[in-house]
Length: 114
Length: 113
Image (cartoon, one colour):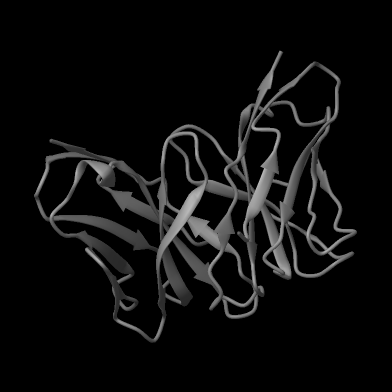
């Protein structure tokens, strides 16, 4: 079955530590996205990528970094510069970045501070 | 900046009721609008996508309407069931070249038997 796989499901970060969240898709989608969801809040866009080796900052990119070396993979690193990283992180993909293509989501990674 | 508002924030109804969830957005220059469902601790499942040129979309017991001029969309759920209990999120695509979604905070729906 085609879909988006996020791992791990739960992740804990120590002070001063960088952690990387994995996102893999086998839908052959060109565009991929990372969102952050806080309790009672809507999703906010962190980074997005239209094609391999290209990505753009979203609304809350500070303290995060991404790479897009392969079409199917879009890992997100939460750096020590992100002072409030506790949240639910969702990865999504779409066939293209034009607005007529629906976005499909993974099951998320919940990140907490130790 | 596009702002998306969903009312009510929470809704609790008995099984079998027909119900309406509301979504409003500030910038009417949207490309389309998407409704999602989110179960606790899970990702989002796409329910319906309405293009800006369309007035409504239907899927089973769900019907979503779009009125761009007034900046509103509604999601109608017919004959609600306990399995419909979830958070429903509305999101708009702004612009025709970038697939950026702007989300509302969601309506948490509980359908009790």
